[in-house]
Length: 183
Image: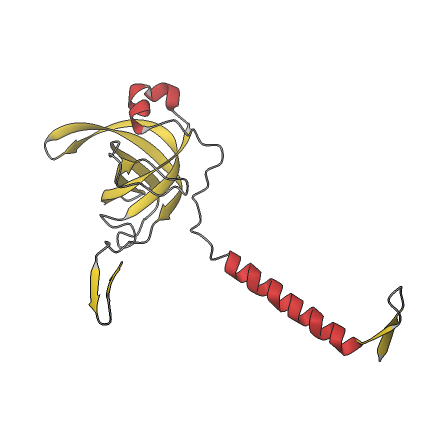
């Protein structure tokens, strides 16, 4: 069946099947765009309603005033402890970038404890992994690093983001028609 359109440019006939084909291609293109937009970046740990300027040092300086504050801290997992009712991660904190990823090229801040009820798999939450935690400050807890006494700011975990391991950048030399350097 043909459709007839009239206007200042004259009469134009369009086959309905052509319109359906164009609509299907547009729908397919929109679906592809939606699929690729989901792959655009790593999901950021939920950062709404957090105290952005609150650091582990500030919690140590004012433990009562900061109790209950929501923060987003991250760093390297130093160790994990699993009790019968909860799991605790000891994390060496680093400043975070805009996506919430720890910036290892900057100076570390200090260690903190992140606690959650239940079990965190030690294979996933392994020593040396990069992690970002959104949590609620629950105070300060004394502990040990070797034989030295240490005060840890303590968080109740609300959400975690484990970051993929990055390969260290190495220079590769290729010989052929020219010399190339790649990462």
